[in-house]
Image (tube, rainbow, N blue to C red):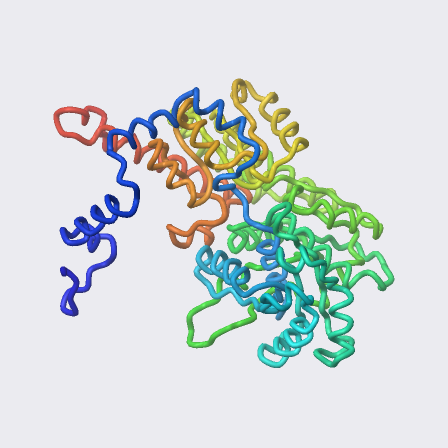
Length: 513
């Protein structure tokens, strides 16, 4: 075999060695039906046809590679944004390993989360014993200030009542009666990670606010929403607020330090996060602003019921979206937008104008969470591009209608299509029958890139196969500049690839563009 202690090969070159090629070919023939390559190609080509597309889009009983995750993942992410909080997922260990691995692989940081380790006996008799023991072990082993409880499919199917279970666990001495244990029911078989985020945010706020008396203090609350770029985006948002002189605000769910700890010899299980005292005091805020409307409907409704003014945006990337964010902050706080931010805006417009010849009329397919797809499509329109396919597996009819109104507001939106509740196998048919210049989404799009030849720009959670993208903002004028450069680099890289053969295609292999 080619592998040896003297020369250890990475898996990529290793599987190109003759021995492995022979082994994989034998496996294909003996154990994988061994259909002829011609038949595989014929069927593969047919699945890229208009005929197959119509069958695919009519599909109802099956979902293939949805562009979403399940509710508990969003709940774990939301809880991580609070000071010294340990997420406790009432369910099986395997489910919790999935949430931890998703967050750890994206942020390249440890993601702390525990499980009540429900197994077959708990599925039959209920998970109360698991809750009693689990809360006690969590407090003893990890010493959190707060334990945020969510659920998986198993706990929801058998009907475990978190409120009752937590109360009984406290009575049995698992944790002190006054220890903070907010909870949210997050059934993984309905909704998506954005619903879990919303449910947990509401669960934490209602835990602190429900029996408290409100005294308005004029501050504002900001909820970032589920965002794979939250590390950089929250920091960028803080910078924008500082530029405006806004001091009295609370970010509800601040993960900017949680998923970006330094390597200095000290392990930080808990780093940063919204202080619990600030979360309690946030009841007194004048208003709560969500940066992602479809991430926070229940939470905003709860804030409104408590007497707060509420408002929601759609992922503030690009000129108009950032304008709306700054103007809303100005309206809520009375602070003027300073000249420094006007200059940043002008620089972004200048950068877009400088590259207009390359950006104009480019076509895109965008997939991901509803707010992300809306915000990115709006920025594409600002650049003179065409968001031809806008797909959100967790987008509903109201989202689709709002998307259609957005596309109708620009001449570049003509002929663009909105695809609510569709998955990435649907996207494959769309790219095969109505090709576009670029695809915008998460790492799962790389298989579409390989299959259809559509270059992928990674701007959505999760990003597993590239490192550190989340450390650069997408929010605000500066964030939009980051997105702009990613798009332009993709355009130029594709042009280089198409003009790289000397004497044949290199007549436009230019040094200056």
